[in-house]
Image 1 (spheres, one colour):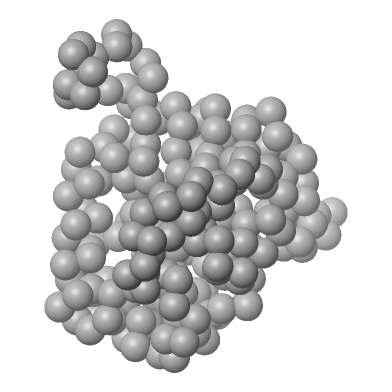
Image 2: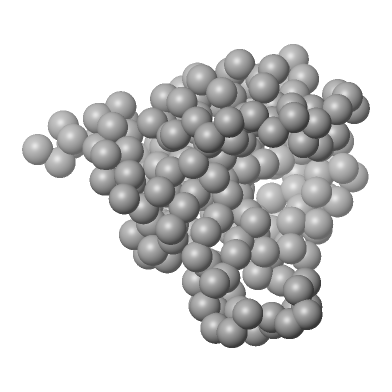
Length: 215
């Protein structure tokens, strides 16, 4: 399992998700929820507590690394995100297929997902820098081969944010899962390969103003 880390930027700090964040997350999720039509976001303290407990159970199995997003401008936790669907390609293949096997110290591929923000933090650069920090960890520390990002095809806001990263559009998987609105959802898949990360990093650095800061 990868070691837990705190990721710090100029706008945000991604802190390992814990039960200590429940109250703050519940407050963040209670703001205007009109943008959550296609995103599952827990509502109320009990749902948030269950959400955190489930994420921590997956973390204990080495399948996810969840974060609470702290907006440094306000010093408030304003949402959550995670590196998830961690796959480990080191070592012998498990047999029979699906059997549990010892995994490596770091993942070989991962997804970024389960990202949601309080209404007050949307459109502020918080999401963009959060993605930059997780991508940097995945490609530069873990040396993953691929990062996958996906969203409901109806979620134009999320699709635009993913495309702004410079991710490659892989296609749409029809009837891929149950949607947040309890309909059958078509999902758009995007990916970034390790060979593409330098160009994506440069693009993101420019959008975050990191080039000027380093000059």
